Image (cartoon, rainbow, N blue to C red; front, side, top):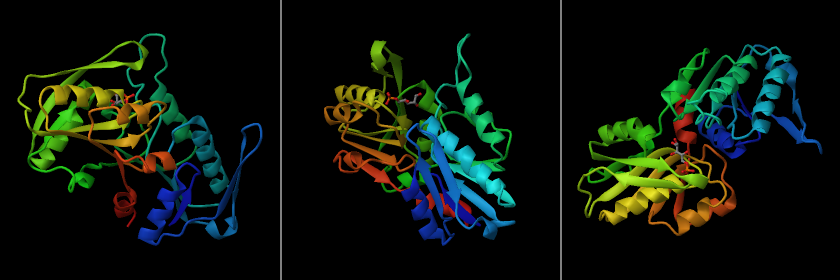
Amino acid sequence: MYLLSGSSNQSLTENISRITGIPLLERDIKTFMDGETKILIRNPSTLQKKHITIIQTITNSAHLIELCLLVDSLKSSGISKISLIAPYLFYSRQDKPKPGEPFSPHVIIKIIESSGIADITFIDLHSKKVEELFTIPTKKLSTISLLTNIINKESVIVAPDKGGVERAEETAHYFNTSLVHITKERLEHGKVLSKLEEKEIHNKDCFIVDDIIDSGNTICEAAKTLKIHGARTVNSFCTHGILSKNALPNLKDSELDHLFITNSINMPQEIKDFDKISIIDLAPLISKTLK
Ligand code: R5P
């Protein structure tokens, strides 16, 4: 097997290659002035009948196009099988379309499948509904085991909204801890309002689990609600750190003590240096599935 990295998360692929010893293919990816991508796989004649695993986090349309181009350049090299590991897959939150809206994750998954990959591995995808849209074989990786040194038996696991209840229940069950639910109401301009179910969290160490942190509003509001109800500490683990505009100032001013995220999305230095955030490397977890 060989690994091939898209441009979205090269450091993660390099870590995986180092751990597994699986060689990384040499390739050039260039972007023209008009935004078009040019791909070149080096030494394509050596790849005949080989199995290639592409690692590409897909956070924007350019990453998706790049993936399709990488697959096409491999297909012309006579390889036997192309697998994809997509640590993060965009559009998966738009899984409840209203009349007149597209079923966006389905559209994205159809594009990925039509590129010609044989199977896909994903990590903490937003919902079961999205997982079930794939028609090619899938492998699902869970990050729960990465929390072993972070969550202790005394922690109270918190679901920050209805969509996160199953994930929080699974975490609470895994660590044999108690669980509380928060209900989230989305207000105008991305603001959210959190309400806590009637449970005693006074002086407890609360741990919010979620799949994604984007603006940070969900987690910051949940942390505020938990502290108002007497929580001693509030920490959080969100697998995918989108951390878009305002997320850092939001987190800085919030009641959240610490945030753990993974490197499913490549992090800029500003986030790596942010003292309230720790980044957990996914490379050991992904490497286990490749051995
Ligand atoms: C929503 O369903 C997701 O699970 C996250 O709770 C949400 O995407 C977080 O977004 P934000 O950080 O902008 O509140």
